[in-house]
Length: 145
Image (tube, rainbow, N blue to C red):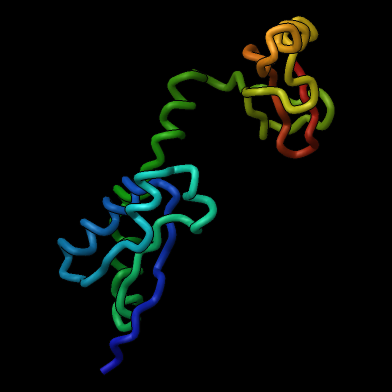
């Protein structure tokens, strides 16, 4: 009998890992999570440790694949629903340089701080507080308002 364990998948969200683990345990599969405590106590280490690892027996991998493919409720991505609520319709932002719709809105990378934020930070011997935000194209790297 093959009692070898393998890392079935990794998750950067401990909640998602626990949901999958509970689903597998309810279906009768033996499994456990590795590095869950580190990722929960200090989320900044999550990238360094490689995320929360779901460990299963090698003999169960095919049955687990079939179970998870069959269960469509695990394909739920809450970030997609939030995006859909914010953007009703087809008014997606398009990159002015390359025409891509792979665009996000967030903190600027090139001109992160305004001149006033830099001056005030210099005078108070602290770091700048207010950062600029803009649209960022993930395909060509162009930043625009």
